Length: 259
Image (cartoon, rainbow, N blue to C red):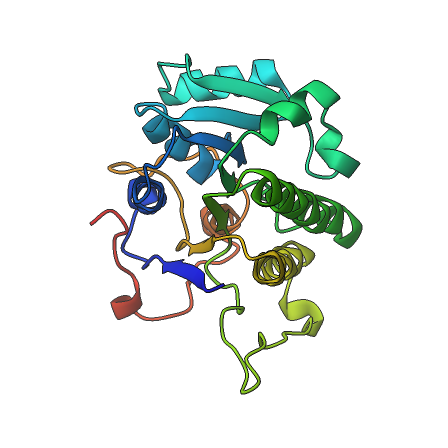
């Protein structure tokens, strides 16, 4: 089983990232599409739902709060929710916290988009592991179950653009990357290990996997307006407070992300 890797350049914007996901899904129309998705209220998730809701796919969205998710998506411009079903659960809980009825709904999906996980580079290691590693194991188990019973059309995993996995050694295995002191946050480390876990699980159980590595995403064009305060937002806040008046680098590396 080959892993299909989608590398998104730094010149792509939020809509471009999600369009690439949509293109992967559109490549196969063998049967009605039922998508189980995590991270639907996140940066890339909201735009993905907005685009997919305009099509014919049925969307099963894992959310911690149905009311909050509905409000967030509506505010983002998701006008048609007739094909959206909210599934209450949590990536950090065993079995994703699904009820028996909801799990029966989820295993009817033929596509999985796993884009969930708290965007917070300051997460403590134990919390990051619960969210990303437990989430990866649980979603991968669902993929295995679906593929074994009715066939999984596609598993799409959205990972940080800096994920080191994808390169193989001479024996054909993935190159192992160890934690490097304080240069890597628990948030980044656990996202990367979750990437490896899903890659290896997909190969072991032979279900189709695409890994999406988006560039740094701030917000949609043309304004880039965002509510995000973590990640690159920390840099912006530092500059605003004059804690970091000079940004390392040189002018040739600073380019607009909208075009």
